Image (cartoon, rainbow, N blue to C red; front, side):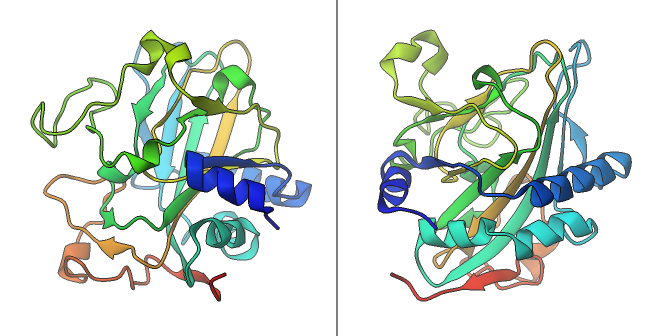
Length: 269
């Protein structure tokens, strides 16, 4: 399913685009799931844009158990197969699903960040899949800082206020000010059509601009864990939170729990 060039790109850059991964029927399945999700938000639903934004950026997490369309894509599509090929190893485990919708006219940028510092997992064997159900022009797509997954943790900050809430200022290296001199950085990003997907490591720094004009950007993401993923309870509230999990999984334990089902087992190589 993946050629060696795509695998090499993912290993070196921490991100890769997979064109036409999902069929038209699968894209429509995800659209129905998104409609169901927006009509009946889950307990983790939230608005990620400011009150004065002319558009609206909303997100929701961890709905695969109650939205059958999400479960169908997670368990039945080729998304987990691609994740397994990219991660290597013997297991592909679902970490969580993530809905991200930017309505037309949304100004809110998603700032440059890594995902893993906000999560309750340790380990390098992981990846995320992000698929749109609307055409995404280049100016509204995800952009990635190539190779940043090899740099370790960079300072996580709150998205709207840019506070270093979890680590003292100066205790971790900051994400560079990429927007101040974009030509100085190796930035990757692709215009996308429904059916396309991007995969990226949870430590690959990435961001997205707003959605100008009449564009609507509905996207669905699945996060996957591989062989070395272990539970890492945090002293802060993770995104998403898994309340009570620290009472069931000790620190350093494999993510062997019904919340994180195994999607594929495979023979490495």
